[in-house]
Image 1 (cartoon, rainbow, N blue to C red):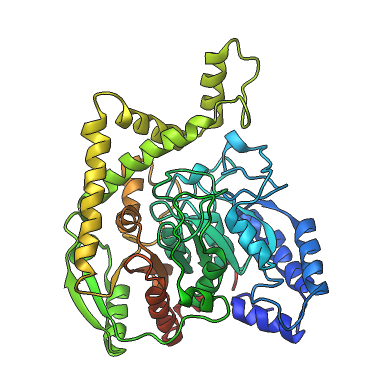
Image 2: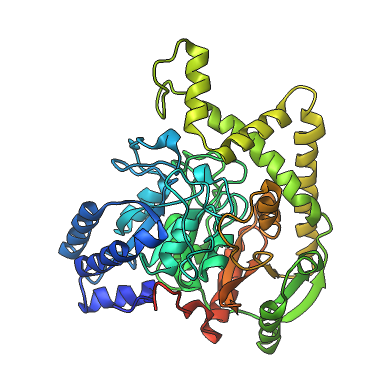
Length: 483
């Protein structure tokens, strides 16, 4: 088995009988056993369950089997999975066994994927480095002294190190795209509402969106197509269906037309090194696309607005964890107030507490207008910036992150950590689809570029990304743990 095999290659191998789902599952379980101690990418590995699902997939395989039938994947440990731990990488949920499946999990079960286990993450998806996990930090497969990005760092590291061919993630302010860039893989965040949030443990409900972490854009399209769809159990689920979305379930995106691609000047002004993205721009021009400079004037206000809004929503969503019904409960509380205070103090990590406190402050009497309401107004301006830009261009091209993966334990200042999201947060505030693709190495570490499209224009985004990866081999570069 080639460690860089993509989903379509695994599908053809299974259909041709070159290997079985059980053999394929054994391969990835061995990879996890060999490498995970160095990376800490998985919180829970369900070897017995995975092999049972693989055997069942082999038993009823036929020529009509779907493209994901019998292929192993991993879920970020934020998706509820019936009968398995769902911890959100927090002491608060360390012993929680979900009684039901998230919609994303259900959709992929129907596609007959094999679940290898649950991947590590920043606690409650709050972080940009995957250092905020109760189960320990995740290491970057390219350099174990560096972070993999966050919050979906476990999923990104697992795919980059070939512990799984694909994994789910969530993206609230860049938590799929930034770790994909740091780990040299493809990260895709669909339009807000395109994939159901039901059973996905909430951080910031108006921003959270499920996404994919895969080796290639073709794999991202395939996994996304089997995750997307209207869900009446999610009040924010988008009901519009697209003919091309159905087509993605069996084939990658079609040929990419010539596009007008915008380069936001505010993003490039803050990029540490332009070498790789300049080379990408030249390649796009050579392919016949038109590149032009555009402006997104409220970009500088995005990070501040995001952390006010996300913190406010987190303070509300996480108020349910009080030690009463489920989750961590302190020992021997003397009264109800002591139960609440100690259960939450013991159950939550430092970053989660920080965001709960700042969010509660922003919503408090006397400060709501000054902080939360103002942040929402800025969010509207940022959305209007994107709308204006898309009047003149079809897609935006930006860096995914200001630089390459940084060393562990180096960004102790929360504001410096938050600024790692400067290129991904605006898209989340506007609810737009975005794709991070690897575009080469800088100082031996992966660099990512971000493509952004108007709402529900995922087909345009995926077609352009697929064209890039048909013309380059950046997505096939091998990390240290795979070589």
